[in-house]
Amino acid sequence: MRNTLIVAVSVIRGLDTRPVTACPYCDSEVGRRVSAGIFNSDFWANTILTLLPIPVMVLIVALIHYVLPWPTRRDPPRQESG
Image 1 (cartoon, rainbow, N blue to C red):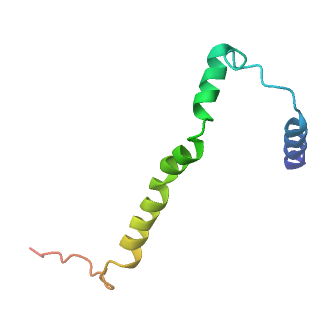
Image 2 (image 1 turned 90 degrees about the vertical axis):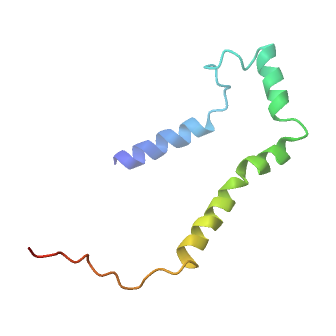
C-alpha cells in the first residue's frame, strides 16, 4: 500500500510542468548567463571529458581483478608455540 502511494505521488509530481520556483537565480540575468555558459557549443565535449575517467577506472579495476595473478590457496599464518 505504501509503495503504491509513493509511486502515485511520484507520477503526479512528474506530470507537473510548472517551473521550479526555489531557485532565485533561474529567471535572472545571472541564471541565464550561467545556463548559456553550461549549454554552449562545447557541452558534449565537456560532458565526455567529465565522464571519461569512469570507464578508465572500471578498466583498471577489471584488469586488476581478472588479469593479475592471485594465489589460489591462502594458508593461514603459522603460529609459533612457545
